[in-house]
Length: 170
Image (cartoon, rainbow, N blue to C red; front, side, top):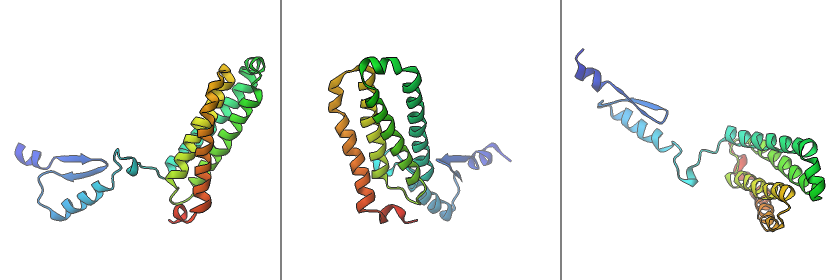
């Protein structure tokens, strides 16, 4: 086989799709174009948020909640007592764990709601994250960020309350 024939049969990778280069197969071209259009791109409307991604996100936040709860109870207890912020830390851990569990449950549905998932994740970062930093630093101006996290939680729960059918279809 000549070098040109070998080169013409080279395989080009497009995402997870492989197709022969230089082939005249119209069916292969049509199929590859159709499959390529379903590959998630950088567009926020096309983020690849599937069940396993939601479960992993929930597991990550759950892990952080348990780890930060243990850290607050054992490693940071003296600092939290000095700052008088034990209740603040416990509230942050509670909301972190509750919404991590909500993400895990959403991941069990065939088509999890992106808005609810991102609202819960954003709420955990804004609400719990600001409370964690507030408890550690006593920087009270961070209290202005916390309500935005609460609103994100409410948006997530509102989506599940008023549009439950949209994410349960499989």
